[in-house]
Amino acid sequence: MDKILLVDKPKGFTSSRVVELIRKNLGVKVGHTGTLDPLATGLLIILTGKHTKQASSFLSLDKGYQVKAVLGMETDTFDLGGKIVRQSDKGVTKAELEMVVKGFHDDIWQIPPPYSSKKIGGRKAYELARKGVAVNIPPKKVSIYSLELGKFEFPYFTLSCDVSSGFYVRSLVHDIGAKLGTGATVIEVRRTRVGPYRVEQAKNLEEILR
Image 1 (tube, helix red, strand yellow):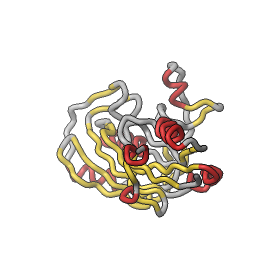
Image 2 (cartoon, rainbow, N blue to C red):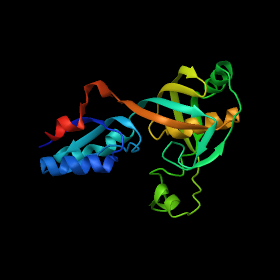
Image 3 (tube, rainbow, N blue to C red):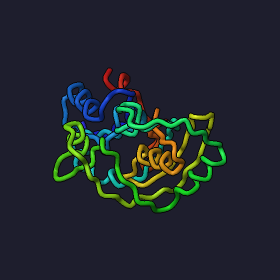
Image 4 (cartoon, rainbow, N blue to C red):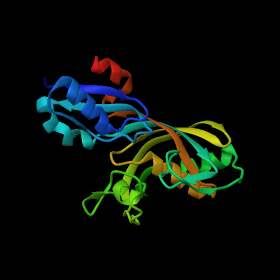
């Protein structure tokens, strides 16, 4: 079976777990084309059989995301799954938030989150971070093609963005919070697009495993 499967990944599953479940179900070679955090939902492209050899061609594709975040809090993972390391009761207006969001456009330098799959000396950053090893991840140039502020009801706000491969939405939210002086943390992330593939075309995991 040689297929390209578009999966709407549920919350709480790692990308590797999704691959494992599909492999057991189909009994063929299976791989994914770019991880999604356990907290995240949305489009995960799974390749089976001979298509697994094409995985690298998917890694460079642009991505689309929708994110919900909260101001006034910072965690070590940059999302709600982590330990709170900072809190602030400073107020922020929509105008102030809009001004900061508008500052993120085109090419930017971004530092991936300490808890990420970015490899440092051959080890994934999150493996080192979990062991208490200080992780020094160098910044990487990434691109923002569009970034829009959606709902804002302090301290909560939503964003939608189209970005280059290698972009971390958690880092974007963290950096927005840093510029505002309040801290900010991701609550929800949904990947809506990978290149020409869209989450509306995807099937949920239960449907695929039937």
